[in-house]
Figure 1: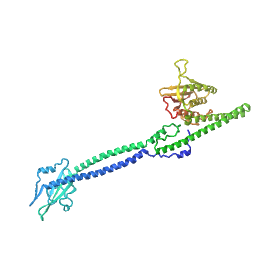
Figure 2: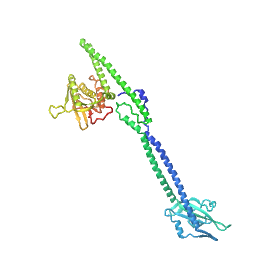
Figure 3: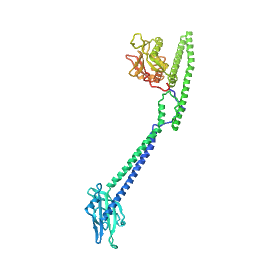
Figure 4: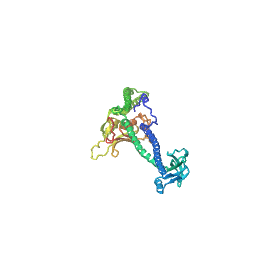
Length: 498
């Protein structure tokens, strides 16, 4: 995989793990003030409702006190109380609350009603004909309760011998609290619905406002690792457009870096292959011309080193072609995997015979005698798939040992919609502890042979670029099975630009 230059890495923004979501941040700053304002409005509404409830109750108590005062009529020798049982029942007939009253003359001296009503704090300061309202507590059969009291002082009698009378009417705060609660509910409920509607509009607005970021995320996350095309900016708002433009600048720099890396690999491999080929040719000529055993041994080692270096360069070139950017440039097509493996196996038979191994292909049985097996079509890059299968067979020839049997088969897994290529050998096998490490670059499970530790890494790189999987398994009593699983065309995800 290409590595980004350090200068580009330094330009990337650093995001701490504790960074918050922009959507949650905006919602918090927009909805929390609404919640605070709603709570403040509820408290204010409660106080306003309580004040208006007090006014309504005070007005009712004042009217009741005036009505009661009219039933007490001054006469020459005192007061005439015309307060029949029917009038008393009218005053006390509130079904939801209890009404208390008291008439005293002079003020504070009980005449009529409930003597438990407490007088105002400063009776002498009361202005005649002007009501006074205050809260008091009174003992009842249900315990001590808080009441709202209206007191009014009236003057009567002859001039110079005037007297004063105080009429008190009280009502418990049950009706006041009920009225305040009703006012609060009637006011707070519409306010709550309004806050909820505003919250829904805020949420919708934030979601709509951040939609370009979501589209940008989908456009970037939906790309393959080989897609470095610029992001479209036409429909993006100004803020997101600046972000996308910055990403496009970074993508252009990455494209240039990858292209430079690919050119370097190609140029370096080309420049190295030519002198190595000359070195191999010269050592072969020298081996034929010299008869000195010691010199021949040295020349053979030089020839083997040159051969191994040439093989390493070829493997590096193959690995470079398997990179995502190279795969995208080479392109894909539909081909017959079974025929490709048949031709490849036939080409490698002479090499297997030279190494003392028996290489063959296990063909599936056909319904009609003499008829070729059915084609097994897949989508991909035939050159790279051929290279991957060739590496598997080459790896078996190199390490299975002389007299080993190597069997190649191609089959279709209809249940999983996969094409399977298996390479079995009867060699010593690979320890299970190394099954994961053998696919790493430059890892060699043994020092025998002329391998460079890139063959299986190339196989994995190519197979994964084709959305496939490569696996290794141990055979019994001995041997190794390398299997490559590739998706059939109907199951292969559609890639960008292919």
